[in-house]
Length: 620
Image (tube, rainbow, N blue to C red; front, side):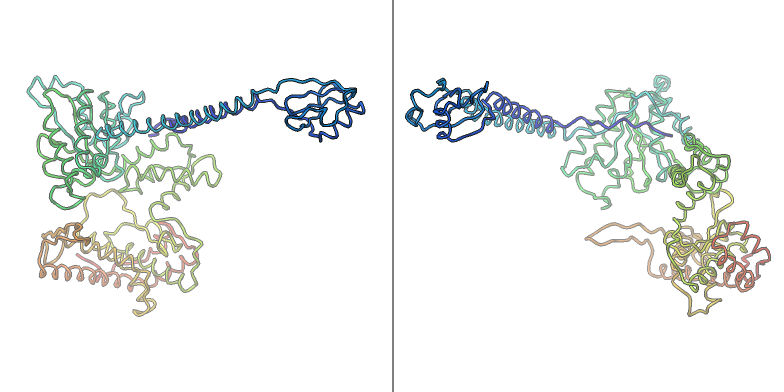
């Protein structure tokens, strides 16, 4: 959904306006003085030359003002020259004859310019000093106001705007909407519940992965209930000064109660609501005081104060238990990643204002984007528009959509990277090994695309996509994933020899080891340690070193390592059995990759149509 963004406020700051005002005043004074001062463009000539020409009748008039003489030549209407006589001496004393045919006019010199300049010397500095002190006083007043408002809440108020967000504006998340419709009904009809003695819930915790729409759903609750919506981030409570966060919490709840019924939305509440005493997240007094104040405010609502707190987090496991007890965040809404039909609805919303041609297949994209959030889908649609604009197209095509999806999912193509023929051949066999193992094993996802063009940080990519959304993964499916991850390394070993394998399988081996450890530690899928879970804490910082809490002993750790090693060895044997049995198909697929560089699902299936599953690779 596209939200309208208000135009930026370009009003100049008080400092700029004040400086401009005093600059204009000073310039006005200087310009006035300049224009009021006597100005002339007369030519300066020597006094002796003027006296000689006056005695010879070449000058019509001499206008004497103090020691300055303005000269009007014969047949001239105004003075065109000027000169200066000696001080305390008359012009006759300097050589002008008594019978010289020249008119002499003596006037008192004007003192206006001198007076104005003398006044300017006094007035301009005075004005500048007054302006400076005025500016300093205003700055001090602003700092004082800022200090007084330091403990005020920085929450943004929504819900008064004309364009409200409602549930129909948000595609997908139907189960979460149903849970939140109860909150809307609480806010709209509180008397109905109070008449039966029911208490309006204090808080609702929205839990979901990043990009699933937690903030948008919270705004939709406020839009549906038509109530004010105070939004703030958890990190905005905490400052370097102790007590500021608690003060802001009090101010926020006070504002909400004045505007009741209302909603308070705290985004990323784990920034301030982490478990106390864990030493994680900066467990200092300020954060704990802020959390304590939130707990008190949520328990201390006045009877009938129709205010509900919505909070969002993707780390509910680190929240303090006091936040989650009944009477506080006693309702929990899980916002899951969208399913296929939800992804299709989200794509339609994002393509609503984008021109697309008839080739665009949104349903196919929705099927391929399993595990993507709403934000991921928005990113794909935006990238598709960028790709179309780059090729100067007026509409988005399905090819643009495919390029955008692949760029975001597996990285952009790096065609500028040049590989020699041997590296290219080795990459082709490596990717063919992944593809053939994944194609042959019965519980593996089908191959979607194989390419030897470098993408992202890899030399080539073999891409598997599930045919449908899955909520669970079995042991057999995990083992097939492990085997196809090792297929590239095994193909290199069989083709070039065990001592000529390359570093190209580094990321594959890390991925396989990570899956094997998760199977044993997190899912209880080991052999000797079956049905036992050994969850490891993510760790914390202590004395500038990372610490990990391991809830098992050394003997168990050794057994876990053995289980992981056994899973990797078993998967390597299965991959080797598949590739050895289908060596001809491996060579055929590698040659096709060298010729085409990129093969899609249909081409791979056609090339590998003669492959078979060997007995050694079967698990049942």
